[in-house]
Length: 354
Image: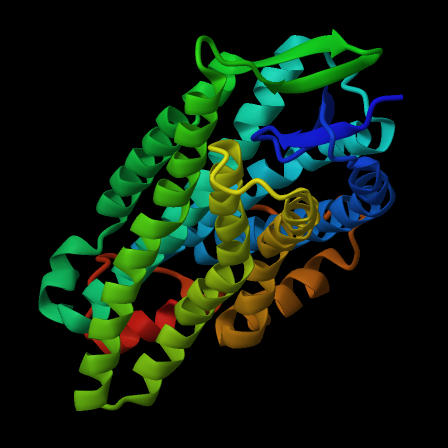
């Protein structure tokens, strides 16, 4: 039996289908053993946590500000990402894609749109904090619900367009008694793979990272000149979201870049190649965990969010009930909007974000 080498499609699954002098059966066995339970846990916690964020924002916050809109869209992005995981769990466990070409395209597309949009909304939240703190007067005019909706629509459009190659080129096919779901490119496949990896690194890391670093550098300088507890508390949550994103996604992007070098045959060492495959599985699983963590950050750093969660559980009394009193039209008394939504001070707006 010929040893197999591994390649990765952009659904995040590892394909072992090409003859190679470098045996990678151990990588495949490792993935089939450990990835399904890990993906399943990410699915369960990500679904529960982000659903609660959506429920709190709709029931209590009522999406009254730009920050609320971005938090809501970030939760939707994470849910979109999470909904694709059960398909990859079965794919990894069975080493077969049984859902057909249409679902191969849809699930791969859903995965990548969720990936890009989540990163872009974290970036937008950093810009939102930057405007609120560094340009407080301008923010009174710019940080409106209308602009929040418009910029959110633009972000979704960019994520949808950036993910189109996956929708176009993903396909289900059978080879060597195994059915795969992966991208098949026309012409020079190496060029396409390199371009796609570069796209993920540039759009998914370098551009958002550059913007976030600029925003938080300016925020820190501003807060250093004018210390205020409310400002510091408001920044903590969004800053934590950014740090968690960097910790959980940078390793994955580094490994993807090294994969480019392997694809271009710049690095040609069997041992290194195998270690890179293990690293790819580990860092990708770490990146998947990220979609579970934003709700945890909101809970521990957001005082109002904790209050709303407690109120939600008091009202609903358990996930198995129909929650007759959990009408989305009900407004939490302390958050009823005034007749004119004017943000009198930057401090109040920052406090409300929590």
